[in-house]
Structures are given as structure tokens and as C-alpha cells.
Image (cartoon, rainbow, N blue to C red; front, side, top):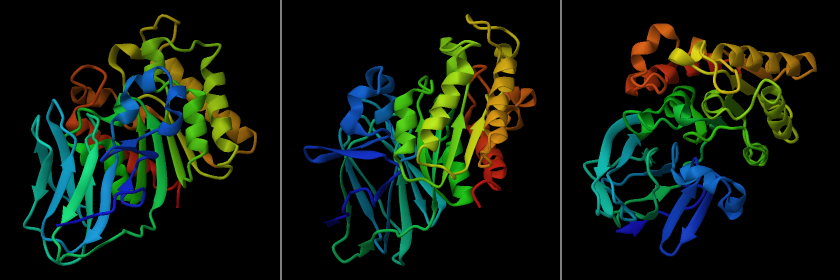
Length: 328
């Protein structure tokens, strides 16, 4: 067996790669500056590789992936030539898995890592007689930032999160900054997006801020405006879509501790986009979260907040339709 070279060309969707002995850990922040991403590396979510995939072209009939041991099940998805093939479940204590029976013709292989748990990769092997090469993608690079609803822990599998579905439908090169409970528009995330080469940016605003009572009527718009201004320091003409929250059951009309409702948040998010456009930013756009998932879809919110697997699939299709005109 011979190894695939693991680096930023073959591990897509990560912002940085940490070498830890024989293992590579994909990060969704710049891990060299990890102490600045408070609290506690965004409460541990920055190490969870949502949207990260091992990507290469090969004629191999089988592929073996070696990973660090986990105390819980870890899911991986195999996607070939942009079509879902199977989900692989690695049991606690296991350190590798093999997929075989693959076509010996040259094909694009994407192995999606878990959107639920940290993954450290040791090696990826193909047979000695097989060939491989880096996939020279012409896909436009997309960063999406959001909450657990963007990390999509409850998605059916790693390639069936809404960002993965949207990126597949629009043929985008995804970087998913969905951090469960951690979407509070911190300057460090704004700097991260600013300092990453990218062709398209989407930002989901509101639900974590509502739940944690992070900002009030005085500070909510100011924080998000400042966040976008930091991004615009380098991404001057990159399309940005700012989305308001999807339907939030009782949160729609029930104020949180700082007297915000989701109805009011949506109005203020739209007003942020209006302010930028009035001041000459023609590359920023607004998406109403209720156009993605609304009260008619409440059955897709089993806990009244997070979509289920079918809800995420619907969101992926709807965001693809909304985004389609903004990056072409």
C-alpha cells in the first residue's frame, strides 16, 4: 500500500492543519493562534471538522483511512464524482476503515469527516499499483458562518449537512464555520474570514445571540456591522449574504432576557444590509430565514430549535436556490 500525501491540497475545508506526532488534526480556525479564540477554542467546536473532506483523484479499487482512536462512534461519508456512495461508521476503539469494490477508472474521491466529533487522521492508503493526483479544483471557495444549525450535528451524515448539500448543488469549495452555540460575531472570526482567500461568504445571524442574550438592542447591530467591516478590509467586492434566523417556535414573539424577539432580530438584520447598500456596498445581500424554514415546517424541528435530517436537506436545497445568483 502507498500513502496519499495529506496537506492543504488534499484536506479541503480546513483553515489550518496541525501536525501532532503521526497525526494531522484539521482545524476550522487558525490553530497557531488558538488561544485567542475564546472561550476555550469556541468551547471545543473549532476542532470538529464539519465540512472537511479528504479529496483526491485516483484509480484505486480500495482506500484505507487510518485515524486516532475515539471513545465514541465516528461517521465518515464516501462521495465519488460528486455522488454519495456510503456512510462508514467507525466503532469506538477502532483506528482504521477500508472501502473497497471501487471502479478502477480515475475518479474524484471525497471522504467527508465527522461533523460531530474531533478527527485526527494518520494516513490514507491506496494499493501500490494504483495512481493518485491532487484534484485541481476550479470551484469557487465559499465560507459560511453560523451556529449549530450550520454545524448540523443532527444531519443524516457528514455530507448531508445543509452547507454540504448547498456546496454540492452549486459546485462550491466549502469551508464551514458552523460552531454549535458559538456564533456570537467575535472579532477573531471576522479576522479569520478576512484573512482567508474566498469567493463567496454567507453569515447566519441571531439564534445563538438570542439564546445567550449576548447583545441587546443597543449593541446587536453595532457588533454585526463591525464584523462585516473587518471582513471588507480585504474582501472588498466578494459577495456576502447575511441571513436572519430560521423559524424559532416560541422565540418568535417571546422576548429573551434582553428583550429581543426573533421577529425583531430579523428586522434589524435586514436593516444592517440596507445600511451597507445605502452606503455603496452593492455586494451584500439579505436572506430572510423564514424563506428557508418557517412555521409550516415546524414538524422538522423536533426540539423546537434544530432541524432534523430532512430539515437540513430542505435547507440545503433552499439556500442553493437563494445563493445561486450572488456568486455567478
